[in-house]
Image (cartoon, rainbow, N blue to C red; front, side, top):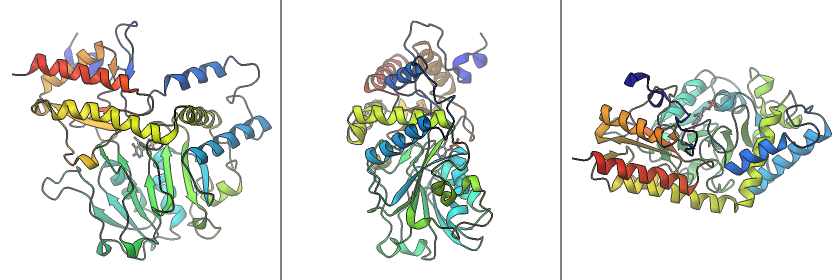
Length: 394
Ligand SMILES: Cc1ncc(COP(=O)(O)O)c(C=O)c1O
C-alpha cells in the first residue's frame, strides 16, 4: 500500500481488525459514552415512536424537551435567571448569533479575546455585525497561540456590549480551567463563552463570573452535530435589543418566547443530549467528570513530559493545558515517525489522532478526551506512546 494512501494517514476511523476495541480520540464529532450509545440503540427497540418520528409539538416530545432542559439546568447548576436554548447552525451559527443578538447595530462595540483558531473565526464573523476590539492572545515571543492573555482595564472598552472568549481552544489545546475574571471596573460587561469542547467537564460560576451567554455545539461532549446548547441570561433578552437584521431562527428572544419551538428543533439530537445528561448524573455529575478529565489528561501529559523530548506539546504553562485536547508531536514533527505512529496506533484500534480541521491537519497530532473516552482508554494510549517511544528513541 502506498504510504500516503494508507487509511491511517487519511484519517480513517475504522480498524483493520474488527476484534480490536476501537477507541475514538477524534476532536468531534466523536463517540459518546458506551452506555449512552447503548441507550440510543435501545430506544429504537422500545414500543411506540422514537423522537425521529415525533412531532415537535406533541406531548411526547414536549416531555423530552422539559426533561432535557431541567436536567441541563440541574446538572450544570444554571440559575433561574438563565434560559436554555437549543439552537441551530452549530458553533458557527453562534459566532453570528451572539453579535446579532447583543449588538443593535454595527457601531456597537464587542471585545474578543483571540487566543486560538476558533476565537479567530468567531471574531472574523462578528466583524460583519459590530465593531470588534481584539485582545491579541498570541505569545509575544513566538507569535503562536499557546497562552491566554492577561486582561487589563485598558484593553477592554467600557462600552463593550460583551467580552468574548473560548474556554477551551480545541485545536490549540489551551483551556481556562476556571473562567477568567474581568478587571473589577469591567465586571458589569457580560462574558460570552464558547464552551463547545469543554461543557460539562467543570463547574461554571454563572453569576460570579458574569456569564451572559454560553454556547456549546453538541458534537463533542454532549451529543451529535445538529443542535447547539445556548444558555442566555434573561436581562440580555428583549424585543429591541437584537439587530433588526438578526434572522428569527437565530434570535434568542424569539426562541425563548416560543419555548424552543419557533421552528422545528433538532428533535432527536435534543433527546440525545438528554441521554448524555442522565448518564452524567448517574456517574456523579460535573465534579466526578472533572476528576476524570484531570486524570485522563494527566496520564498523557506525564508521558509527554517524561519522554526526554521524544514527544512535544505546544502549551508549556500547565495551568493552561487543555484537559480535552492534547496536542503532541513526535521528535519535533519527524514525518516518517509520525506516519509510523499513526499506522501502528490505528492497527491497535486508536483512531482520530489526526483529523482534518478547517485549519488543515495542523502541526500536531491531537488526542481528544471528551466524555466518550474513559480513563482506561487514555491509559491505553499512554501505554502505546511509551512503547512507541522506547522502540524509536535514539
Ligand atoms: C471551540 C469550538 N467552537 C466552535 C466550533 C465550531 O462548531 P461547528 O462546527 O458546530 O460550527 C468548534 C468545532 O470544532 C469548536 O471546537
